[in-house]
Amino acid sequence: MLFGVSVREHILLFAALVLTACPPPISTPDAATTIEDAGISSSDAGTSDAGTRGPFDAGTDPGAPTPGELTFWQLDLPPGPLARTGEAGILIGTDGTLVLIDVGNSNHDDEILAAVSELNTQLLTPGRGYRQRAEFEVEYVLLTHFHADHIGSFDALASQLNITRGVVHRGFVDVGPGTNETDFSAMCTQLTGTLAAKNLALCTGSPSSPCTISGRAPATSCAGLTRGELFDVTDDASGDPSFIDLGNGARLELLGANGFMLQGRTPVASAAFGVTDVNEENARSLVMLVRHGAFRFLLAGDLSGSGQPTEPDLESFVVNSAPDVFANGGIDVTHANHHARKTSSNANWVNATAPSDGKTRNVLAGINAAYVNSPHQETLDAWTNGARLGPGGRLVVTHRAPLGGTGTALLDVNGRATLQTVERGGGYWLAGSAYESVRR
Image (cartoon, rainbow, N blue to C red; front, side):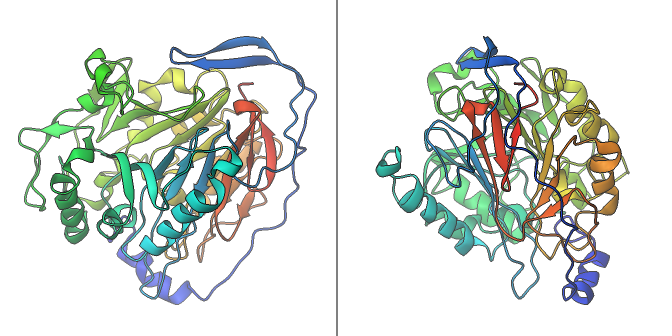
């Protein structure tokens, strides 16, 4: 295994990169409906019913971040001459807060810096309703797990980004040989040295792993999941679930890390699994829920779910640990785990996030051409068979990789994919089409 993708698939890459394919055209859903339903209000106490709202009207495609609304960019990271995999996204808060989620492979720092610069110098400006920001300023970096295609550019970015609040990661525990030692060591050295004041480890051990892969240092605690608002140290002892404030009641909630999940206010470990295989690192991915009004967006890195010996079923553990997350309509947009590969998106996960109730939902996946076979046909079918995503729902990918699956509900944007809420989370635009939130 190399970076969560099998050696066989890497060999197939060089035979298949020259292939090109486009998904069949699909219809665009209506931008407005006449359905009236319960409105939503948000505060520090959470989200509550706020009575009735008028018909949903998404208006025109916002096209760029808008004060009062959330935006997520799934970045387009090219494979480059060495056919490197890589994924990164940027979450833009309603107030302009920037949260960089993963940083791609070691050749992707230029693309990430360009995206951050574009936001701070062209879109998040005083003239557009935001405060003045430095060119490479980000509030947070979140690293979902330690595979090279998610952390490889961290060392190069650490000296160029202005990280004002913190770097959130699962913790230097349970680190196995499936990680790339060069990338892990460079990241760990930065976070225990120059960036030590910004180091926000969710799980800890006694002792934690050194900045080398030298044997297992198991987690003894994931207390970082119960720090309340991460930037507010005054509430760290409260035991409240950890979250990042995204402005106007919107938040990114940290539900799990390293095989631990919050059950209520308590981090609980899943059934034990080892550190010997590459995909066991996937199983340790962060689990995050973004809330804004009625809108819900679920992300979980490369979380595994097949249940095979080297791919622990953490997806079912998440579903069983947090039933309230999936209640009352499932999830509006689910970030497909592990680049829409068949190690993930198992039946429990898909049923919880996208119940077959006729409502429209969407799935988003970060893929480049080096993820040969992505999205796997089995994964595409799991999300789309039986009209599970509802009228107009799609599986949106940054790229359909060589030999990837095909279907009428697959949308290959061939570049950056943009997700943005409207009506303060009453609905959203994704890849140029508008949808009402299933919880509105």
